[in-house]
Image (cartoon, rainbow, N blue to C red; front, side):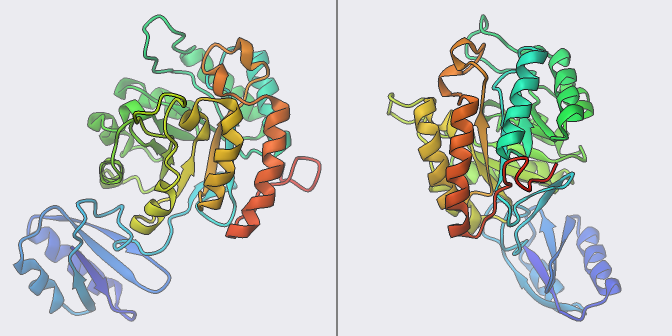
Length: 347
């Protein structure tokens, strides 16, 4: 349920509505748009609450939100949310590219990749310090040593960094080193972890689960939003289907669907979405055309020797070529892409 305030309402009237909601045993959150203020009621309100709120001073109308996710709903927040990470805005006019190795392996590997992706126009560096792996014998990341290398790469290149957090016990540690906390597909419904990152005052990127519906995905985002963290980014990374040629099935339809259902920005990860490097560029272009707010891509200096996911990683040369094609497509959907460094790009 949301209470839409009138255009000329006062702060006192907004506070009175919040106080009334609290007195009835519910919590509330405010969404302030350019044209209106919306007060959302969290929980399962009784039918009579709608009548009570409608007669209050400053309330224009009260609308029931049928979707189980309230704060993630576009009805609650009609305008697009833009998540700011330093001087990078995700969800605005710029199509933001996050790129880097699947896993941080060494200083040499990470620094070379960070410099290469920045030169091609990437705005955020990705790299895994903690890696969830299907096999317990696979490389599972360098841990804090990897986080320190990411921080070093940020210092040398100026690129903000994003990395995955897998456990509630590691949230504070990862938050000290990173600019965006990533919740991986396997943890999309780790509700305890979602509760914890909901209390962190840093952006969180939530990947879609392996077999998650749109509603389940948005409900997972709701956990983070309900915790007080409004800086949530969604990431479509493919879902598991009966097809075995690709690692996953890249669901590009998720991009316009999410934009219709939710105000949260959504980026696409065609690396995990396909699992094959030669499919990454076409699916990246398709995602841009579908309206994605950004891309997340795996790039490695020598994919054949990568410790993790080399088969889906782009070389430096292929990444630069892909970025040129993305720049050609983006204007058709009202997006701009940072130019290569040395051609007017922001440092």
